[in-house]
Length: 404
Image (cartoon, rainbow, N blue to C red; front, side):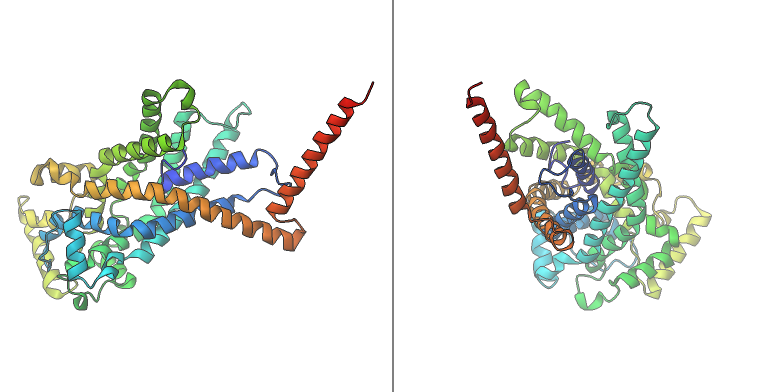
């Protein structure tokens, strides 16, 4: 799995993280101290992903709004009058009409919590499922076949998304709250987590918190597709002698291109997920009555389109087909440019952040060990190891020079 080729996807990031840890624990730490526990690696990865999420969040918000704006305009009670024509146009309108830079970070805290939870839950599920499969195999191999690795990754992703999809629904509505209030912050009094959660339950019941979950299951295949494309491009573009250890620049470029293509292929599912989660309704009585009227109208005729807007298709493939039929195939890729841009920046930034955070956590880990067990810091231990090896070399050289 190419390092850093997966930074825009939490599940694939955790997949890489797991295998880095396995390699770390195959032998005793070269510093002569206990290796950094798996929790420490998971913390480093999650922290890096969280920081990267903060940096790229404005793009994520813009992409979500581009994905859902057509659907929101059709819903009863929609108060917004803005139409975003592109990423740049959306950024300009949000900046000037919604109170400045802070508008780009609506829902940031919830989304960051979801990112960290996704990483940890995937890591735990992947570790459990992979170890279970390894124990079930008759041989003593430490590796699974590629198909089983991908299957385990899919199941782990489904597990983590099951628990974090309710948070994702809240985040999407927080991102869309200003659109629903007509870009007037003073009217956006129902954007708190509690208010949104109560609204979702009132509109859809408890199952409403898992809107878009089926699309999330499809999106868990994105890391596998990215990996397949990466390996294919590596074989096609790199000389044979560089394939096992490609240069960092080639790894970054090929991985970014692979991620962009994989994101393009799965993007309609991302758009369908956002629309299912952003099926917002105004909390005032007028909107409630409009929805009730649509429900009653549907009972007498199947041709009533208002009902379809009130209760969109629950099947993700049906949703995609409906969008393509009613809005045109191009509507399935609205906001794609921003998604690719976000993935590219997140990909590079997270690689840098994770390395920095990982070094800090290792230093803290050794500092704690030093206090509790008397284990010296890594610099001191590394120096001691180097001196010992140097002395061994000198001793061996002296012995070889002695006359027999």
